[in-house]
Length: 571
Image (tube, rainbow, N blue to C red; front, side, top):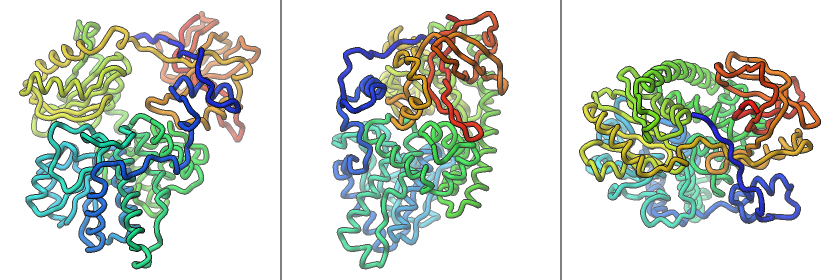
């Protein structure tokens, strides 16, 4: 799949503020920012918690559980959002004076996703009076019914899209449930539980609870490091509210005011904690946490985030890193298998939606595989693996313009017997179906995706913020852009393009191309990661067109500007 560079509209953009740097004016306006109010990153600009439906009921239920010292069980999910959500709930509730707070995360291979009846059976052995789901539960109708029959109260906190029927829980807090008026529909699971704890803290304060019980009233910002990590890891849209949460969390991490687990994970991934960015959380910390849930048990990741000392956190971070290395090896083998399958499918180029299955694939890694293939093919992809029951578990990843959960919902309406269950977001979803239905499902998936995409949707385009002038290719500009974020999903990091003289090129680290570029009154270093070895190095090429990001390179205490090349082609 070839890439195509398309320039964002940089003409006739609104002037946000006269004193704002011209480069930032251009970057922000191109991302739809129409007022400097949308750039405010102070906590006072967060949306109020009282607009979340179900909040009053959830707070009253939690308040009663704390007062009566009931057993509270947090039921999480097996990804980084679920791990951080669980950690926020436990840290906060214990700080509020709850004496019996435990957690349970379903093993993805034995129980699958969410609060299932089978998981409730396991939970009963822990004797909870109250179950609080985090990052799951909105589709757990049977699980909630099982808990209620066992005399256990249930609060659901989730952010996934709901089905036509809601569980009969004691309270549901989810910005995406029908009728909810909370202005941001993009909170991650960790953002939702943070808001619940924020509301609970306020209520406890209003009841003079902290004073009566001689408890120091906690500052909720102390857990924003976890909120930032979970929000970035779950690749939710960084709307204004999420940018505030991530920015404030990054500030705490940089200042060393974060849980030891995050410090340990940054250390072992060789990231400078004092200068950490959202991308470091997404590409270095989150994969290590996710590896626990993919290959083993997410409890290890949660314990790392709950660790009280750096020594134990470092030990767990080392284990998580080894799991992540194991995951990489498995993933590489699966990618080779997938490419062989694609070669055998003669009509792949005609398929708008691609489904792949191999009975040897690891169930915990198919999400990453689907994501890699989606990037390679630039079309929606579902990768399937065998579950322990013999059914197929599928993990779907999509492209802009195709809401993958809506596609699955339409399949469920048109062909109600094909799938057993499904759920997810616009860009990612999961599903289960009988193995015998794979071929039929593949055809139907391609059929419905084909109805929803245009040829333009299937073009792999890079949106560029245009060219930079020679004086803008500087360390000062790179530093300016580092501080202009946080950048991420739906608020992308600035990308530029231009033509350069190719003065030097050499391979480093096996698959990375180190470049020296010229032609703009200066020479400037650049690096392209994981290049196509069949095309580069190209010693016959002396000019290149590239799409790139400005980056700050730190080496032996010296800081300099370099270009991170996202796309390169001979000029």
